[in-house]
Image (cartoon, rainbow, N blue to C red; front, side):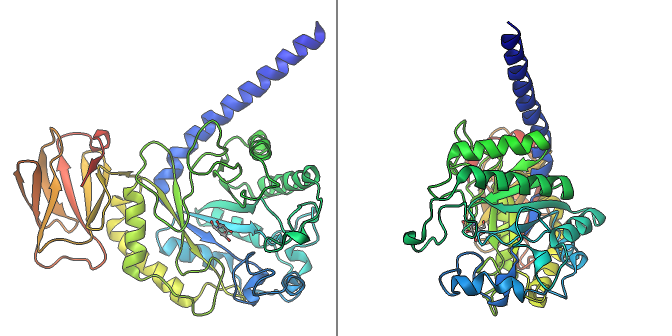
Length: 429
Ligand code: FHN
């Protein structure tokens, strides 16, 4: 009888913990999605070679060489405040650092492994200094953690390019290490979100992902966790593990029902690469706009150099994005995507009784959009207040744009309508 009562109490506790987790995460998610623009930072000893983090191990860089790079890793010009300032100057609201990537090197003084920053010549807590700088400058702080770890002897896959190097491993011990590291990261740096990655290899199961997910929520139910702990990544379902979707190196489809965030590089590689091809200002701005217009966040990646600085040309590009956001930010932050499905010519965001039409290409100075059911457009203007003529004919609306548009990257027409635009159905433009 006592055992039965004890069992029921435990079950009630777990259920209430789970529902409390869902409630608080539910509260944080809309706030997170209002931020719309984040900075992803891929950083580690591999910057000494300029090849890709994790994946160049056993490829461009021999394993023994790769695993010894930390002995030379000394980013003396690393200044967390400068990284956060570069992000803020771009209009970025949250920052996610790769505390541990697939190569297993830890950028914080973990007790779980000697393969960490305190055993490099640098001997400073990069994760800790970034967490502090973010708090000081009012930037939301997030932490990237790999699931797979090719450096950990308990993880069966030691070299993804050569299965003959696989070992028996011990996933239970591997998960214990992961839990220990997560406990350190959560209790020491209080991250707003945890960004997992590397769930795709055989040794890792959906059940493993779920176990770690509830372990995290048992420490802090508020923490948001992306959908890369489990094995299901395309949808949010009872099967999937995680709070939001993460399309990679592409702008996600318009999705008004499930929170999503696209992670995209400002150059080509995630970690720093000398002379890596960088996206143009127009491409950067239109990538952000099309993501927001699809109702998603953009996590924009930079790879700082081996000396700890973010390349000057990337800082300049970010600043110019910030200049654009200074004018047009209200058409991005705290808005919803739609009602028009983005295409090569236009995209739209909306807030209250305003619809922001983002014009990428227009036929001459006329832009045609589909009529919005039962909607009256009270006024149409550019952001600088210039009037835009509206003519409705049949199923379409013609907007007559000024001959000279104020912005080369993306011009925004504000439609003031007679109702809450956020309640309008999605329409193909
Ligand atoms: O393998 C990683 C890659 O290095 C990078 O971290 C990206 C970022 O989302 N994710 C993985 C590739 O899918």
